[in-house]
Amino acid sequence: MGLFDFLSDKGEQKPAEPAAKPAAGGTDFFGNNNAANPATTGESYTVVSGDSLSKIAKHHYGDAAKWHQIYEANKALIGNNPDHIEVGQVLTLPSL
Image (cartoon, rainbow, N blue to C red; front, side):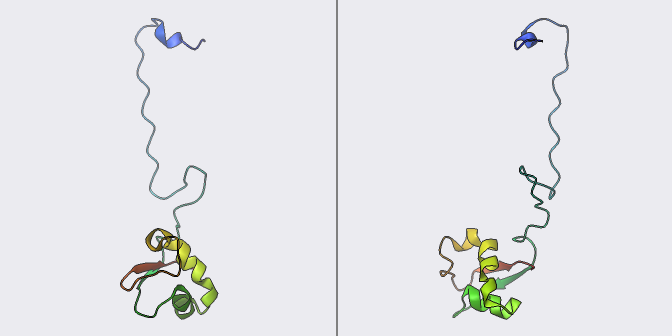
């Protein structure tokens, strides 16, 4: 079978069927399980005046050092500076 065999007349052939779409959740291209994405599970929290990610972590998780988990779950909303959260932002607090 050569590279250009599809050009030769071999009679009628059915076109290839499209690949099935992956189900919601499941695994991504790299095999990571994205069904339990921490950014989509957990509860939400609205930022109030005087808040910081460490204060929120201390209040909700009992450990201020867990602010990293909140930041990673909300990085798209917060941006590159974890110290810059704004009053009224609704953050997702991932389940730990």
